[in-house]
Amino acid sequence: MAKLTILLYPNPFLLTKAKPVSRVDANIRKHADDMLETMYAEKGVGLAATQVGIPLRILVMDTSEEYNTPKILINPEIIRREGTRTVSEACLSFPGITIEVQRAEKIRVRTLTLENEIIEFEAEGLESQCLQHELDHIDGIVFTDHLSKLKRERANKKTIKVIRAYGLDDSAKEAS
Image (cartoon, rainbow, N blue to C red; front, side):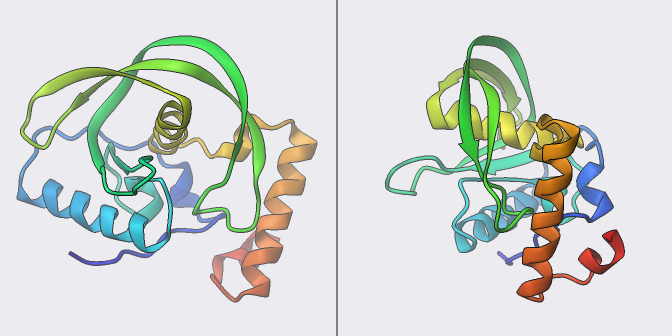
């Protein structure tokens, strides 16, 4: 396994719509393992392949309290949504900001497993929130896209300021 570099806003790759995985093979499993290692190292609860420069519909997550129940989803899709709630979110690609986002309370997801099996399951609470956030990423949507134009501009500027202050990424220089 290898720790990958997380792309930071405003890297244009974050707006890439990922391509479906045609079949799970050793390469896809390696991507998933590397993504899990990266997510755990960065203390995140979810990570989408597009956040680490992989243009495929893969996401990993672990919302367990013990942080020991990883999930790997290949080509996930939401097939049902129920209810709505406003939740506070952060994002590994947007260090230093937290925003309020509207999400479905409960969802039903269809996904491919590492064993090339299609399964469905329901998720609610933090798991549902995380899945929706990461699914947005693989669809080329970042969480600030859910804000009004003015709030989005403020959040994006704040992110660039944090990135510059900590010298995390040179791409922040290109955005202003």
